[in-house]
Amino acid sequence: MTDTFDYIIVGGGSSGCVLANRLSECGKYTVCLIEPGGKNDNFLVNTPIGTAALMRLNKFNYCFESTTQPQQNNRTIYNPRGKGLGGSSAINAMLYTRGQREDYDDWANLGNDGWSYDDVLPFFINTESQERICDQYHGQSGGLNVADSRSSHPIGADFVQAGINAGYSFNPDFNGARQNGVGYYQVTQKDGLRFSAAKAFLTPIMTRTNLTVLTHSKVSKILIKDKIAYGVQYQLQNSLLNLKANKEVIISAGAIHSPQLLMLSGIGTNDELEQLNIKLEHELKGVGKNLQDHVDAIIVNRHKRENLISLHPKPFINLAKQSVRFFKHKTGTMTTSLVESGGFTALNGDSNARPDIQWQLIAGAMDDHGRNLKLFFEQGLSMHVCLLRPKSRGSLRLKDNNINSAPLINGNLLSHDDDIKDMIKAVRMTRQLMSTQPLRKNNMGEIFPGDSIQSDEQIIEFLKEKSNNIYHPVGTCKMGNDEMAVVNERLQVHGVAKLRVADASIMPTIVSANTNAPCIMIGAKAANMILTDNQQNL
Ligand SMILES: Cc1cc2nc3c(=O)[nH]c(=O)nc-3n(C[C@H](O)[C@H](O)[C@H](O)COP(=O)(O)OP(=O)(O)OC[C@H]3O[C@@H](n4cnc5c(N)ncnc54)[C@H](O)[C@@H]3O)c2cc1C
Image (cartoon, rainbow, N blue to C red; front, side):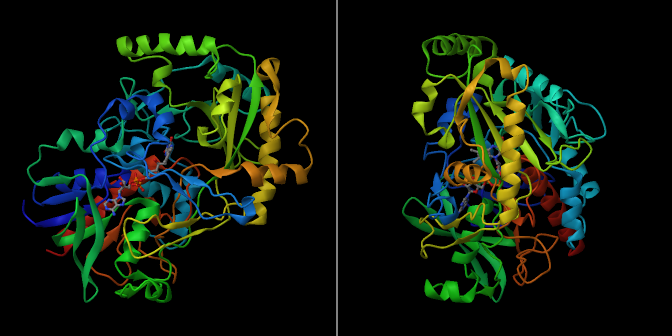
């Protein structure tokens, strides 16, 4: 194998896969994508309901725990992150959501030219292969298959009707003209199977002779000389090998690993790096700072409706029948993303206002990221409610100077008082919705927070004890021009030439949605900018 490529992409996740596709498309450039995990093409990854198992398996998931969080009753918070081709899109819940016009207009207003909603919409469209909706918001030939769920548990219809009865409007497309309302999520699936970023953007092009994909290979360092990136060092089994980049190195290792790798390569805060004996290449104080995620709580009810997902004998037998249906027709419960219905609303309930919270309904009783197995013996219903634009900010630091050590993740959720106040409101609104007909008739009372938990103080205690993130870390290499910014609006690392970051970490503020589609958009837009800049420099 050659050891020199035009472009080296670090990380084969949501952003990295689309980058590899677009940069190798014209055939003029050699591209190498490096990924620590495997190919991820197996039954568990491909079968949508496999998400439940992937939440815990180290082969596909880094399974990080945060540092102890004092404001969350000294708990550590679970941070799953995908490993292997497709990255987190290979283990995620497959919901396809883009966020709000205002999210991207906010980025542009922060000084990031080219990132307004009108600027990014073409990249959402040109990465999408939408099965149902044909209008100015959607694309049909972009590679990422977006479909209606083939599994539709009847509880979803109860939820949508309850939402309408409670005054929320039905929204047939959360990614169209408006986000507000209740409805059914579309999913990144094709023919009833998971469609990760790898399936969408890598599988079809693996035969390109100018593309090299290295799996089971972990980048341990970006090679930098005189503030110019010229390659990477990576681990393959017990060897350390080098690759050179003629043109650029692009870091797409996600919001946890991208800042980790920058710091290990000498880009970060001098004092912090010095303590770990890492030679400073360039000081950027924002690396690892500005960590954001959607703080989330789950309202869990006992519920009488049949065939909710549980370990009761009847639903269990039903699941066996559903397996047969899946093998024969690729339909039914095995194709569930676990979250089939939900919605977005403003905390003031105004159906024309910008939504502040998101609902995601699970047709089963769930606690502690599905790790509380006792709860699966209950017949229940779980409603996630998360804050779309929390004000709390966390950070990430290195534990030591070893790439194989998990970084210290301090999510710092609920550290801002406004987030606590907003979550109290969100919990109350969610309870009201779950007590509206037709959900009400089967509602047998709350497991969490519990019917007796009513005062603000009690709800705060519930939030401290039970709130989590919802797996959307962003912002740790933020785009901008202030002193905490890590990349500029063309995603070039400030002060280091031939080096870009393109993934969830560049978001200056979190988008009001699940983050996979936005990361794919970021990868596609990054590729477009790289190719344009390259043309101009010829
Ligand atoms: C359990 C779960 C459920 C989710 N559900 C949804 C959902 O339903 N809808 C949605 O929109 N979003 C969801 N998300 C979030 C979404 O999937 C992520 O935000 C998105 O995939 C992140 O993309 P990324 O490119 O930033 O990073 P990733 O996709 O995480 O990719 C980073 C890649 O870099 C690799 N890497 C790391 N370190 C190195 C290194 N040193 N060298 C080389 N490569 C490296 C990793 O192995 C990984 O493959 C979920 C996430 C999780 C974990």
